[in-house]
Structure formats: C-alpha cells, structure tokens
Length: 278
Image: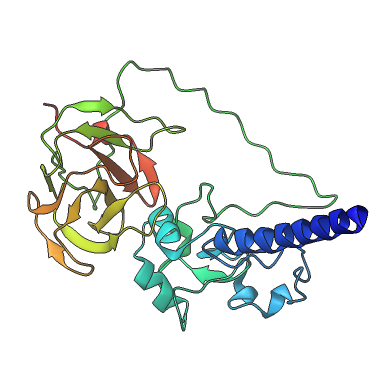
C-alpha cells in the first residue's frame, strides 16, 4: 500500500511539472512566431515559400524576419517608420509577423542601390557560389587611428543637431556595447527634440529602451530617446528642434538617464560627430 501511494504521488508530481513547463513556454514566447528554420518548410509543417513576401527573399530593399524581431526594431535598424514598412509590405495586421516572412524596408520606387549595405538584414552585395573566380581588387591602406572622431561628412540631408538634455555625459558611444550617449539627469527633466522631425514611434514596445521616442528627420537620419518617464508627443506628430518631447526617467534602466542615439540610414553612429561641443 505504501509503495502504491508513493508511485501515485510521483505520477502527480510529474504531471504537474509537465503542465507548468507548458505554461512557461507560452508565457515566454518571442514577439514573433518562430515556425522553424528549415530551408523548405518549418517545424510546424508550414512551407517557407508560402509566407508573405517570400518571393522577395534576398532581394535588395527587403528584409527577412528573424526570431525576436518586431516592426519597431526593423524600422529603427533600417531608418524607417514601422508604419511605412507595414504599408509598403501590405501587412493586414502589423502586430503579427512571422519568422521567415519578408518585408519591404525601402520605399517603392526608390533606387535600392543607395540603400544601406551593412549587416542586420540590410542590402548586401551578392556572393558568387560555384567554380567561378572571384574578382580581386587592390587593398586600401588601413585608416590611421585618431584620438577624436572624424567630423560627419557633409551632404544634402545634413542636420544641425542640438543636445537633447542638459545633463552631463555618463556613457559615450561604443559600437559594441552602447549605441549612443547616456546623459544624466533627474526624474522629470526635459528631453527635447535634437532637430526638426516627425515622430515615427512613441511607446514601450522595444525591449531594453523603456518608454521610447524615435524621430525621423529626413531620408538619412533618425534619433532615438529612451528610458523616459513620460512621453509628450504622439506618432506622426511633427516636432521642432528644442521642443520638449518627453520627461527623463528610468524605465527599463538601472538609473534615471536619457539614452540618445543618432542613426544614419539605420546604423547607429557616434553622436559626437553631430552634436555641438559644450
């Protein structure tokens, strides 16, 4: 009788563990549905070729959704509004995107040859596979290290930025660890637009950024303002340089601060090359 009761208790414990494991899996699901990575079909039996936009996979100006992606993230990394990407990609529901789905990240009619060509799903040069001989070119000398960043190149889309907050700089730009500037302050301090622009995102939908505002200044530049206590603007609203757009806070951060990014064609760049000296 004692053995029978012990086995029954063990079975109940195992069953409870299976149920809890199933709940945990559902609660931690990624922001996009991951249907597998097979080249021909997914683990749930869905043919990758049947996913929306699959016919454009690998083409310049298009991006294939990866695990953990959201349209907000894709927009930030390609210098576009997530709403524009949804419209260009004819998405019925922009809140539901799937791994393997292909979205358009360059405006229709735009010359995709001028689109960014670095990593993160942006346009890349085709690679020749097979027995052909790859073209070679004369290597260029490595740049000489400089103690201070080179000034930003002048161009038609140049923007005269100002500092978005009055606090001191507590963390500088590091391409691997910090994609912008961290500026100190007190909760409620003003955060202002670094230049004229349009609000392409205002919310808390991008992990690690807390309450976030993204401004689009032109076809080349975006700026991002993270960890805010409160947001003073809405999406699609036009703002002027120096206009208060948020109040500094500590959402999704270890202290009160403003995390500020300048992005050129979606790629984070050193703000020191664009902000005036203090």
